Image (cartoon, rainbow, N blue to C red):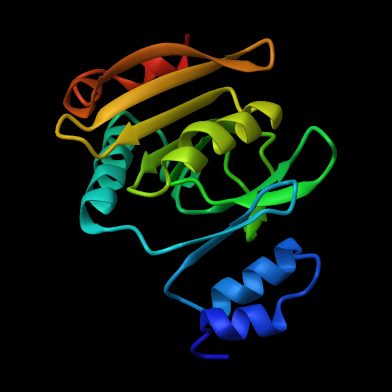
Length: 187
């Protein structure tokens, strides 16, 4: 299916969507990002815009310049998210930092994830700020950052504490880029 339309998806949608189905949908439709919550809620998002991509690139450059190996940083890679009720979902954070290099795969485990970053796009606020925050906390990911696409590109940093994310800092992206990753990832 080279051009997968909403009509085509609706007509051929399985009653239960697996991560393999999600991968097949993304492969057939190179214009959207597909994610599914552990509860089975499907999200289809348009590709990120230029401002979104620049924010991700700036953060990735900052991490690389600080000496974090490229093999431990990835943009837009799938993570296998297991929910509290045992359901399995797939999320694609804008940026992921691992404690060690990962084996190749489409839906990677979260066991070695140190940080996920979501760049909040118009229309994705609820999913990025509420749903994914809850899912990433349930999955045990130690740090979760969001970056707003407002004028200062506000970065909100959370750290997992007793199964819930606690606010650690909020600052403009330019301020973050004038610090070191160790100041935010080691404490």
